[in-house]
Image 1 (tube, helix red, strand yellow):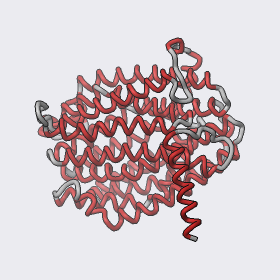
Image 2 (cartoon, helix red, strand yellow; image 1 turned 30 degrees about the horizontal axis):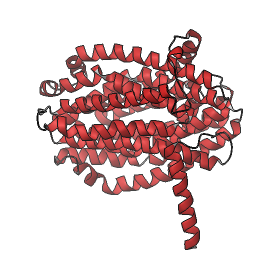
Image 3 (tube, helix red, strand yellow; image 1 turned 90 degrees about the vertical axis):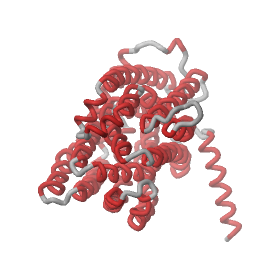
Image 4 (cartoon, helix red, strand yellow; image 1 turned 60 degrees about the horizontal axis):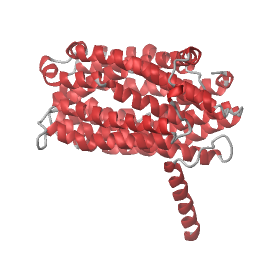
Length: 469
């Protein structure tokens, strides 16, 4: 038995090395379990790198002030809203690129990548100008108190003004994932977030000739780290280190490709607008309970990202497998891939939920010693963890729809779960029935459970298999 265990461990280690180096590129044949592993490992590491940075970032900023933490929470709520267009484009890019790669149409994948990047640049410039000029007004609209605005508006200004670095990093990585080059996307985030983690304390607290910038320093570090990673991504695309290579001859606007991309992205844009706008309203609701409660909520959400991001990694693997297998005319293999990925994700999330249920308050206490912050952050983690098994399947199945190019179905599901259920429920529980912040936490969990159930029922109908992109 020990001998067999050594053989199994050795084989898993070999698979791990192949996965992170990107040597495995065929996902439309052979073992589905192996395909999930090969795609999931770099995507999980990619998302874990993102979530580790989120945790480290909030740990540094927590040492500045409660207002600094609340500033990040309010700003990120707005950032996710204005990024809805870019995220919709990313969903479309992954779906179309994966479908073309599965059909062995490399040229079509290249054309889709170029048009996606062009649209992303346009969106980021519009967002950047607006965010830089109206940072104070945005924070005020979100319910920030005057002292919070005075301390944090520079952070909001720089993060929104320099959003092209975050946006392109996300969008180009979506292209890599669609092509099956998950390891390239992983290394881009390792570079980005590695630099962020190093630069954060330097710019937040000051070091040598660099002055102390406080919470503004976190935005400076983010722009430098992610901007460097975008240059790396562009180098990979232009020098052909992935399955997709872009030359200067490809840098032209192709309206038919762009229109197809926009068409597929519309569902993703609406889908994300519905989801993120509900989070904005929830954040606005939370601000009614004071900066300390809001800070606890913000820390809890950041901690959640540490586990949700790896889970998103597996979900993204499912999206790529669906897109490529549909392109290869293998819909049944695509469906089997989704249910297997969901099962593995549920195992992982089940373990994490137990950790949060037992150690939530200790975990939040690592980031802030304020008793009100700890109590609200810990309660948030515990209540949301109750639905983690459902989240696991909900995330995978939703991304499977997107990977098929069926972005309209998750849009309808989000509309039902978030706007028609979550927001009214949260208001009634928190305000009408005086449950306060706990009412918001319960609404989040209940809505995610509802989303998972509806997603699985509609997925089984199989209409996503007939979508063409």
